[in-house]
Length: 610
Picture 1 (cartoon, helix red, strand yellow):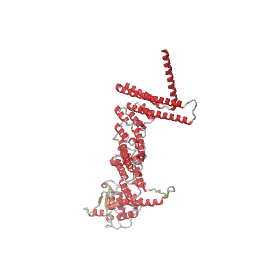
Picture 2: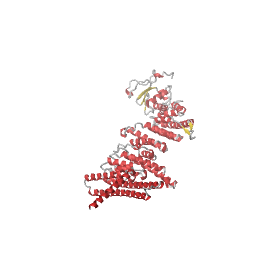
Picture 3: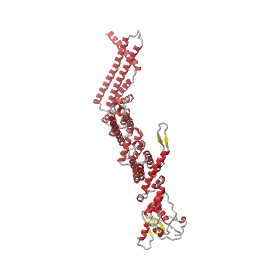
Picture 4: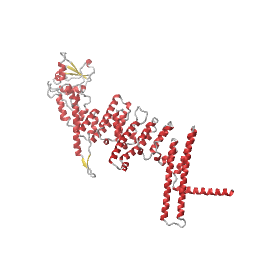
């Protein structure tokens, strides 16, 4: 063939027409001094070439020339060439004996186009297929980095790239080299913890980030191969987190309906595949914040039910570690609600299932009932109870939130999930304020969920003066306050008598005060305390009578406002009485003595007058 010309003369960069039929000059020439005898069209581009170098290496072109009915074939068209015109250009250079450099970035194209053109040893020794295979085996598959580069270059070469086995061999090479690097790197970074005496491994795998360049289908196959090769689970988890952050970047800033059809399908496929890969990972190895984040994405891209169910199950098993911001999941476009309450409800159901299983296991292993009260399950339920009270307060102002959905979350938690009901009372009060159109029966039904015995002093005082609560609720609160006041007075009376006995037994009795006088003063103080309790009972009975009267006679809003004002005044009085302490005892005692003396003087005046 003679000496080859300078490569700078090969394939001039003149742009071609998409319609070669009307093209005057042929755009791409191999020799500047020898006219080509065949024009090959690939993806709308024309190549003016020579038959002999092509048919001597390509079985496909040889067959096309031999089987052609035209005696002087001058035009060939190649369809669906792997890698397109760019890959064919490289193969043509190889056919002409040009010094072609095979690299990790073009070896996949060369191998696929060589397979397409049938450039086997049958037509010439050391043909392109053999050359490409030698480079893959000797260079690419020995390096994790080059295997990853070749695998990422396989996009657009399917299905032939799978047929020639490049994908599978690259994936196996990546998994094998990752396992080797992890072992060598782990041994090199082993350090002994002087405190615990345990071996600790600090190893940063560089390929964790590099895997993010792969498409999701190839990435899934790589992760599966790594698991088979024994790559550490924590490293795989890090790779999953990084891939999600890279491939789903910006999805939370856009709504699901802003994606095009293809983009939405691609994002949905990424989310569902990543969740599927998480199934085999340890539940505690995946950060909870990542689970909530990918759950939000799954809702936005409308992932399938199994995908969201798996995420909700994993979150439910660790719900006590969540924060309030984690639970505030925006609802989808189809819902009028601000937050996705159904998802949180299902998460809570999964949490309670876990608690039920753990409780049954603890009861089977422990016969002491007191140990169950101190179990980790109980502390987890208490944490979730406080968390859900805060969540209820956040969703309560939503005007589109229906009462059954709101009550469903309250009723789902067991009674022992709350030590005090202040948080629940606050959430219900916000809901009543934001939904003034509720019927009285609905208000009563909602307020029955509050345990008045678990309200603090401050919450009870607020409830007693709360006009939004139904009358029965106010009566229950006042009744519990009366019982609490009675117990407080009894306790203070017991403390006073105990201190008096302690002083009389530890000090020398005074000549002015005898033991009988001390006993008389204690009895007098007990009678006064009992009298105070009796007055409270009288006031409570009057309040109940007033409520019954208002039920019968209340016909307009004016009478309703009058009853509310009455209850507010009574409750304020009760609150003031509940706040008295030992410091006010002497003042009340002196007041009662002055009242008794005034009564006696009046009675004397009436007798003298008679």
